[in-house]
Image (tube, rainbow, N blue to C red; front, side, top):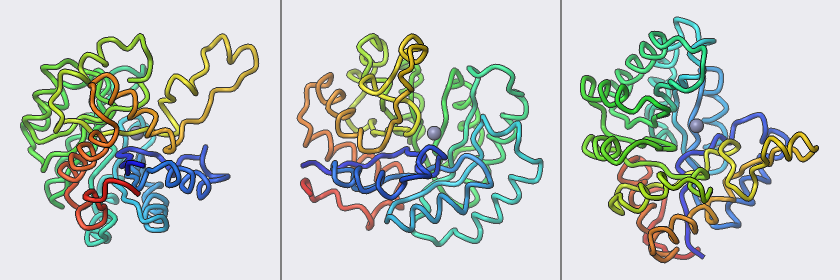
Amino acid sequence: MPAWIDTHCHLDAAEFAPDVDAVRAAARAAGVQHLVIPGVELAHCDAVQALAQRHGDSYALGIHPLYTGCAGDSDVAALAQFLERVRHDPHLVAVGEIGLDYFVPGLDAARQEQFYRAQLQLARRFDLPVILHVRRSADRLLKGLRELPVPGGIAHAFNGSLQQARAFIALGFKLGFGGALTFERALQLRRLATELPPEALVLETDAPDMPPHWIYRTAFERAAGTPQGRNSPAELPRIAQVLADVRGVTLAALAEQTSANALQALPRLHGRVNISQKCL
Ligand SMILES: [Zn+2]
């Protein structure tokens, strides 16, 4: 069975609170050997660190663009203090999840930008890569990265153009692919996933969000009483199978390549994730 790295899983989300250890165990049983757990707000820092340490996984710390509205003005300074305290923790691998979201209405664009840039500065100060939330914001994010270069990272749930993808790659980034790819109508995303070089790809579930098509329930189904399914890190191998199929590669080759890519994007994974071991 191939060994996988889920490079983006919100294991600290409230949806997992009742059975988080069982969720992690199920992922491990499915071959997901390592998770990267990104934080989304200051109040989550302790929880993501504790979860990563308890399960032998990794974490990132950051203020997500969708949380900038409720974040306090002193939160970036407090995040800097937290990073200072944990900077030698081997489980810490990045600053994230940070970025810009121009899709969700009602967000203050200037405030998002302010938090994004301040957290790029933190990544520079602590010499950490970043995990980026990219939603209709690729060009603006790229502008920030050119002005405040960081040691690479991952553009998570990437859904931009090939040209934008190449610009991220040129800045040392990998592109995260997950559940969105599993929808047959996602033609543009599937084309992008075949056009990119193999060394640019990493896999993620973004669980409990972004359910793959076999978990997703339409608005009609939900209205009829079937609740939306909960995505989980155990879905990663099945999502990977979709990517392997569209690219015409074996699952084992994809596992090895994407794990190597994850280690390149997040160098602090080195020594804690064994990718030479093709099978568990
Ligand atoms: Zn996320």
